[in-house]
Image (tube, rainbow, N blue to C red):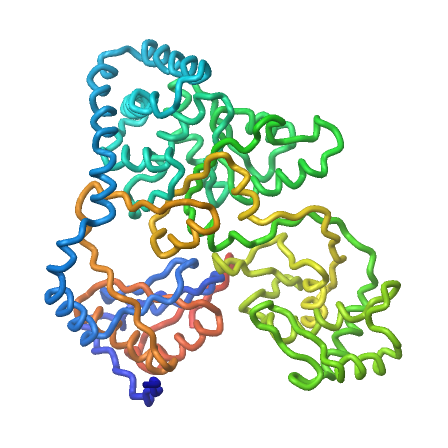
Length: 544
């Protein structure tokens, strides 16, 4: 039976606060826009810039969910949880690691370093890493105790074994993935072929190399870090370390630049076996969400800017579904036969596809810019320039641009200065890049939802790792609404419930346009006297 849209109903009004002004609500949007309803009341709704819409379920829905869990919860107890299954499977290896702890604890720092050196010699003599794993993990645990005053929990040892086996370790937020990564990093670096610990930004790479890298250096390994502002020589030295902390973006671009190098001195990666082992943090974001994102090294082309403006004028005279069709999945447009004829007459050209002077790509880009790329959604205009908004993080990215003339078509549409078009010299996707590694492992807090993709694309199995202590958080089921009004009615009801319970609430939107709708809703339904704070990414906030 088909679902029928719900009729809009009046949104509930928040009850007045006991003292002070109305509730404080901070709504954030992917891309950096923020709205703050400020007061001294206990309710504060806040969202980081990367969160998508999080709508708490209405009270009745939660009651139904709790009832269902009580009625059918007994069935789940008959099936072994994946995390507990992992604990049972790896218990023997865990006990071997634990058996080494008292023996290593009695050694001096110098003796520990000698023990690590002996492990390296055994690994390079041909002994398998699986045979060395218990002692190696115990060494890292002891080294962490002495340098960081942090001892790996048993569940973190299980996570390290999972990563060493070339799997995706699903570990909840706060379970210490950063500390876990040095376990397989140390073990796999014993062969001398290098290990890459991949993070999502330069700060994390720099922080982790300086913090947990202390343990690896204490045990005699060299630790490098790659930063965007480094020279080729500095990067070459960092990649030759036993363990290198690097972002996925820098890793890919350094590979592409190496493909364009003319002499060995220009290479950054190792010349022999450059892709031995990679441990990827936030694996679902890097390997799945951004997996098909192309990394491109380009050079500037000499194309007059007037050509983009002329193509925009022609595209503006064409009608959708008559002169062109929109291919939303492919994110492009296609001219129909009528459209080609009309464009040819407007340009006084017989052939739009003439190799010596092609016009079809320029018109298609102009149509694509008009139909599929909207201001404050896919991009923003800042300081008379078009800035791309990252579709995964929602943040504007300076220096990034669309290829094949699309960037210039959007600049022509926004009437800003048109930059020179880039010619692609080399390109690779993250999927192709990471499949070059002999061993690939990942860690993240949310991998089960993409388990099928991990297996089909990379051949990686997702293994949930048990928490050190039982998780008390209750995760509700997602709710899907047939209308925007129904969705925001549920959000407003949840805010009212949270206000009554004096609980903080996370609210977010996926675009600046949606944020404006949220502001209007709260202007209508939130207590009088509430003030708004609206700001753009990296700009000074302004009260409303």
